[in-house]
Image (cartoon, rainbow, N blue to C red; front, side):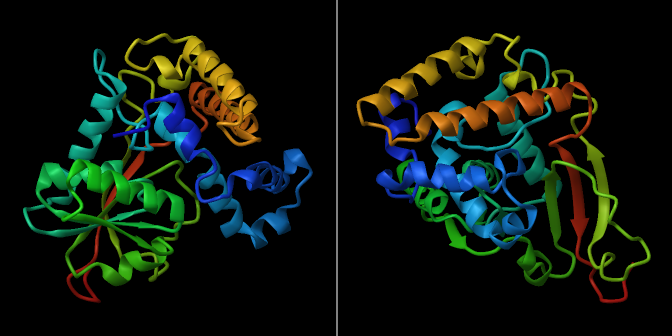
Length: 291
């Protein structure tokens, strides 16, 4: 039940920000960044505000252009983007060994596309953790519309701080990360509390490059809105909606910085600088002294 029409997109622009305040929110968000004259210390000091402004401003664009699941996927030739995303969510459920009736946490859940798919696929009860009010309210609405509101819900909470605490001994945690950091220390006992079962860059051997849906040189009917022509149409549609007052002032600027981000992702993907699909499966030890 993603936002499919122009008026759906316009109605959600700005999230929980009052429509008259969207332009000033765009100004504030942009000024957090060095490219707009921002200072790193101010950005770090106001990180929560920056992140919430970002997701309030962009969530409707994400849903309009990408769908309910805000992630990339390993993709086979002949497979559509949405098919690959669903398959990846099923893969995640299988890796976790989910069984009917189990309780599952989706940490950093967006508007809940993956948690709804996983709940239906595995017959589990899934709670999404998120710290953005608009995404929670939108996800709750979609849960109700799709009839999974009895088994899926959301909690507003800082995400990763809760993972180790809520995991029972022997239970699993799986995640996709955009990059692999060099900060892991195998000699640090705190780092060893959750044992990594296996990890792999799933983008490395994907027959279809993960960034292809964002590449303007690629054309696809199933992903038309992400093509150069589709993005041109969306850009002018947003311009018209903002001109007549249906979309708040500042909407075009939100689309502009999303376009720049997409171009950066494609370039980074082509140069193999990073991956958005570094997968790992970890397990909380059965006992405190267990390897």
